[in-house]
Length: 145
Image (cartoon, rainbow, N blue to C red; front, side):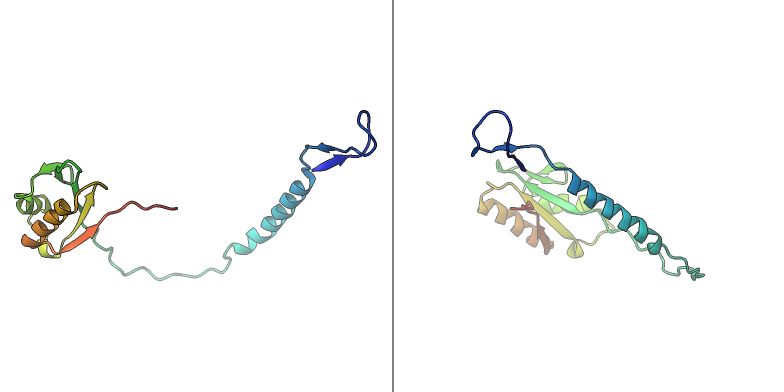
């Protein structure tokens, strides 16, 4: 920001501020960066030719789709998007997993509203353990504060 040292109006000891942005240093820095990138870009290219061997690794199997259990404040319980109740949770969960997936090795993700009572949440956890689902993951909101 500059200052106006003289001119019409005002006394000799008053200085008005000049609010114009000085763009010259910005342009200078940008031109220097442009030159650096123009010189460095050709050096980043690989010029040595190499005959690579073929890849022998077999592609991996896609992991199975994760199963989410959602618990709302009003007590409604969902497996994925299908509503269920607590007594039939184990049977409905096995049905949604299918016959090819082993329930004892399956990880179940639990999502619950912030205002769900602890007793309701523990009821779902206990029902999962009673039905042989021991690998449980809790899903929470990621906050960047």
